[in-house]
Length: 211
Picture 1: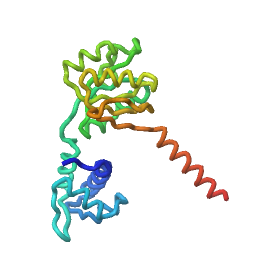
Picture 2: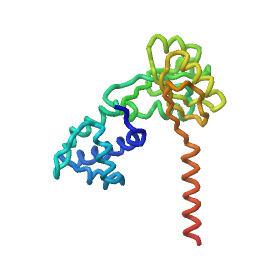
Picture 3: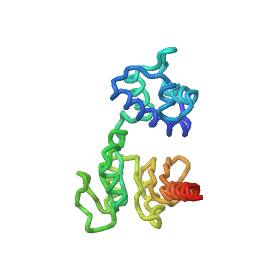
Picture 4: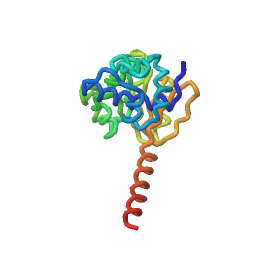
C-alpha cells in the first residue's frame, strides 16, 4: 500500500522518540505519549502507525521494540541500498562522512567529480572517480539511487546521465528543478527555501522583541 508523503515524513520523528523511550528503559508506549514528544496530534499518530501494520493493545499501547522494527521495515531502513554520489564539494563530502545514512538504509559506494585532482583519491573510505567512469560503473554495479550535489548549472546534465544509465531515484541537493520522466523518483532538498524561512522568522522575532 502506498503511504502518504506526509506520513512518510512523520514516521522518522516517531522513530527518534521511540529510540529515546527505549534508551530510558521503557518497554511499552502509547500513541498519546508519542504525540507529546513529536508535537503531532495523537489521532494523526494512530493513523500513521496503522500503515506499519502493528496493532497496539487498548489502554496499554505498543511494544516499543516491535514498533521500532515495524517502522524501520516500513521505511525500508533494514535493507541497505547502494548509491552513487556526484559532486564531491563541501556538501558532497559532508554526506560522505555522515554515518547516519547507513543506519537509515543508504550506503554511498562511490563518488564522482570532474576535478582531476580528486580522481583516485579516497574520502571517508569512499573512492572518488572521474565522471568518465560513471556510466560503466553504474551499469556494472546496478546501482539505482543517485545523490546530486553538483553546481546548479550542470545538475540537469548529470541527472540526464544518471537516468540514461539506470538510476531510478535522485536525491537532489541542488536548487535546480530537474526535468525527468514521471517514473523517476526525485526528492528535492531545497536548502535555500529552508534558509529563507529561517531568516524571515528570525527577522520577525527580532522586530517583535524590539517593538
